[in-house]
Image 1: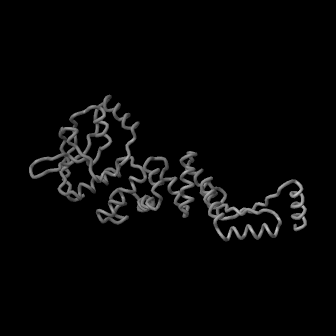
Image 2: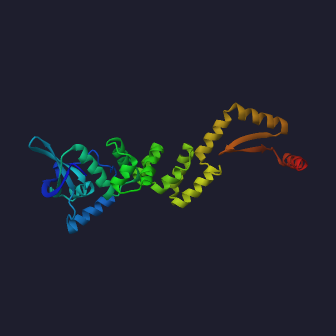
Length: 279
């Protein structure tokens, strides 16, 4: 990458004089993973130092900005380190440093799907790269980059679940097969509450598309909408008058169910006889 001098230097710096880059894509750090890393640091020490660059004001170093290794830096803080070795990179421009931070983390860090999508989006919006160029820079297929960017078409609640690791990229791809935002929410809710595997989520998506499955909340919303609809109300009234029984019309996904209400067994027998005659 132009603008970056390949000569690296390992120096010792105060841990509280290190800052996180604003272009760091990772937002969520697992507490259990950090504690595991703390235990490893106490046992075998630091093997791969974090990578930083100097932030200067004239000849004076203000602080060191992380390019890679935020998780290690956080774990070192928890482990009680006051100074740590770092790899110092000489970066001549802010935009080069920012791009280096994004690409280094994309290639080396286990980011959540949304964190990865955010990183790709920044490379496109901030640095003017095309999807093809992003794919080349990070060593991934263009279709992979495109799939991550599609995640932004999901609702905020589903994106949050992707950030938290409640839903995987595989699950998100299944959710995206549903165009209806309400059905997407229903499927995401099922994936999380029932801990569905991707294949199970695919089966649920098919059921939702065929109108076989509705959550209680969605069903109530549809029934409420039908109850206040003049069309549904008139239909129920006409059918009740024509058949002589109370009729209820309820939406079931893309279909409707029609219920006939009888008062006693005698009415039920009369209804049975009437239906048999019609058949």
